[in-house]
Every structure is written in C-alpha cells, then in structure tokens.
Amino acid sequence: MATALLATDPLERDLDSFGARTPTFFEFQNISDGLEAAGHPDLAQIPRLYYVLRTIQLLDALPIFIAHGATDMWFPFPKPLLRGLITDYDLQKLFHETEESIYATELPLGSFRGHLNFEDEGSVGFEDEKRSLGDGKSGNVYAVRIRSTNRVLAQKVIWRTKTESSHRECMTAFTRELKVLRQVHHQHCVELVASYTESDTVVLLFDPVADMNLAKLLEETKLDATQKKVLGKSLGCLSSALLYLHNNDIR
Image 1 (cartoon, helix red, strand yellow):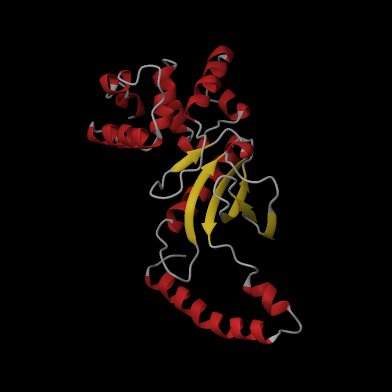
Image 2 (cartoon, rainbow, N blue to C red):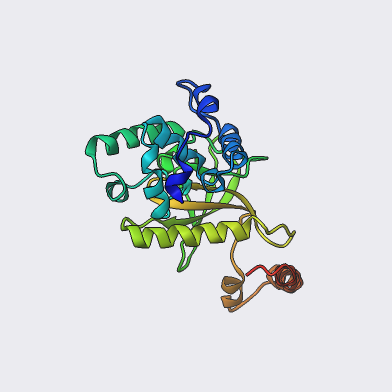
C-alpha cells in the first residue's frame, strides 16, 4: 500500500511553487490538506516528512519511514534512529541538513494549535531559569517564562529515547496524550497552549501555572486560614472538573 501512494508526486506543482523557500507553519497545513484532497490521507499526517524527503529526492524511502512509525513529531530525527531508516551516510547528512529548514524559530501562541519542531530547547525562547513543579513517571513539570512576552507557563518535559522501539513507544504515548489534551476545555482544567519536539525531549505547555498541587497542600501539617479557604473551594472545582472529564469519556 505504501509504495502505491508514491506512484506519482501528488503536489509536484504546488511544492515547486515554494522554490528555495521553506513553507510556513500554516502552509504546511495547506500541504496536508492538499495531500488529503489528492487521496493520500496517510501522507496528509506527515507533511513535513513528505516535504523533507521530496526536497532531497528520496520520496522512495517514505514507505520505510511509515512502516517504522515515523511521524512529523520525530523531527529533529535522532541520528541513531535515522541510521536505521537511511543507510547511506551522505543521504543521512543531507536529510539532517534539510530538516533544519523546517525548525520553528518562535513559539506562536494564540490561534496556532499545531505541533512544532525546534532544533533544541534554547531555540524556544524561554528564560534560562525554570522552577520545578513536580516529577512523575511520564515526565517532569516546570514553570517557565517566555522571554519575549514575560508570560509564565507550565512545561511538561518527556525525554526521548534513542532506541527505535522505545522511542516509538514514547512518541505513541505522547501523541495519545496530546490528542486527549486537545479535547479538554473546562474552566477548572489546565489549558493546552502548545506542544513541540526538540532534540532531546517532547514538550507540552499549559496555562495556568499552579503554586502547588493538591497532594502537596494536603501534606501541610498546619494550614492557615487562607489555605483552608482555598482547600474548601478546590473540592468543588475538582468535582466539577472530574464530572466534565467523565461525561466526555476523557481519561
């Protein structure tokens, strides 16, 4: 099935119109829509991968990437993983050079809700210092400040592994979590602001940032009047949020 998808280049004329310019965030969405309209729903899910392989004239390798579960979220591709997908060293080098063109250079908060790809954490635009909010099985959570706007967000960081099987499992779990979070819209639930991949991690950004979680508050041996008031109100908020999640079959 995968090789049949590549019998022709469905967007040859459209992509040639970009010339040497890399498509923008929103133009990649147009590429995805074009692939969908051309009858290639699988390719519509990976417009950046399609674009990079087409640019280096390696579209014939796309079925291999698809068979290994690779998606646009894998950019930047870890070198050990790419070696398992492209055996020729010169083509590996060309792939890495070309993928640099699709990296985001800013965090476009607002109407944009697509997943982003950054070269590394330093490219995202956060202040250097971050405050730890907690650790968990699936990742660590920090409070981060955007340098350009001074806005503070909660950042959940999940480390990418370098072996293919564990990396695929990591990215599949991340994709599943991201899909669920995009469905959540409730005043007592955190809002997903953005998601992105960088060289070592995949990241979720949320708003607002809490001072502490409920477990930490309950561990306090002595609560002052303000904390008791917050605790009393929070139980109603928590119940409302849980009911919303339950009614919408969100786990």
